Length: 492
Image (cartoon, rainbow, N blue to C red; front, side):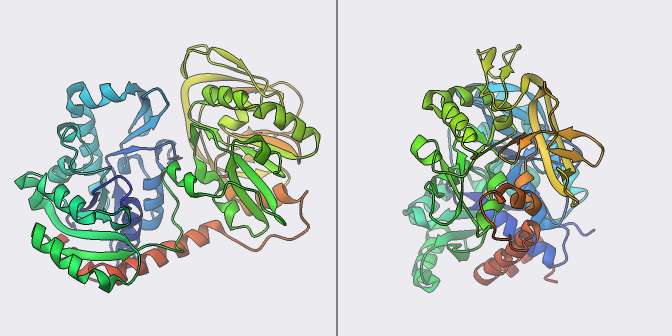
């Protein structure tokens, strides 16, 4: 394997589009005969994924690994912070929880020396297996009060010897100030790592920015290697639940309406992405009783803080409404934390989630759950009910549920493990994230509400096509040759 310099995309702001650019560039390198892998030293997200060997990483790096055509691994995201409210985060190190830390503790204690060393060790291990490594920064590169404790941006770039490309979101406005300020606030050694600037999310004819490109190059002395138009119709899974703010929040006539209860600590919201591509279905997100009761199907999603979110929906009056809807033969299902909420009781004897040690559940499923310190993280293949096809999903949860009645299991994994409760077609729950990525499950879910057959649709094939479309889009608007030349990559 030929070794190349790492390539790193950093941003002038947190939502400059680095994750999507990383995924696209991973696919470009794969197409051109390289063996790339993604890397982000530290991620902060409630949207995580289970690796094949049973560990946990941020969803963005799992998506980028998919774009590379390789299995995801904890070395791609050695540090994952999962916010749990009250300024606390669970710290996942090399795929396993190592405790909770407040933001103050995290950014003040020992300048994160241990985590920085652990992250760099993961980078080195990854570099022995793949090249080039496509690295992703976080937030802004010029947060002066955090720089000496930062383990993901320029400090990591310098240690890894990466070529750095600054990504600026022109849609936000003020692109000249953000680019110039970001560059000038770096020290001389950091600026030397910058090989180019990418202007992202441009709306309109990119030729209109020719003068702007020259101004930026004159101001910074750094070439603009691309002006990338706004991605209008290319679908790449979102990393951050902030994306939910722009998603549909109302029912629609003539569709099977599926409402996802929008929990404050919702995790793994990508569980519902495949539903939005089924033409029979309208997916929307809400906590308003008037909107929830209009749905045919209600989904309680996963949660990082199940008890807190259960208290939240109780204040909203949602549990009582769900009971009424279930009696009226509307469908109520729960996934992971939502599955736990549908049970009779949740106990947290060690106060892992907070001060509440026990709470009554919604009571639709005959089970109780005990929150445990052990986190189960595993990819699964399974059959759904009496289906003949093999489905895929993954489990990430802290807690063990005990089923009290002789009820039917929802899924059976290939190794003989059963999971979930199936009361009937109108009420079921499971720990299995990704269960709704499987067309067989979707068809069974909507069957009580429509006779229209589902289209032959493979979510995985669809995503593969979208990675290729993203790569083509970036090739058209970024000077790939310059990036390759800088990194010592021969254009295949």
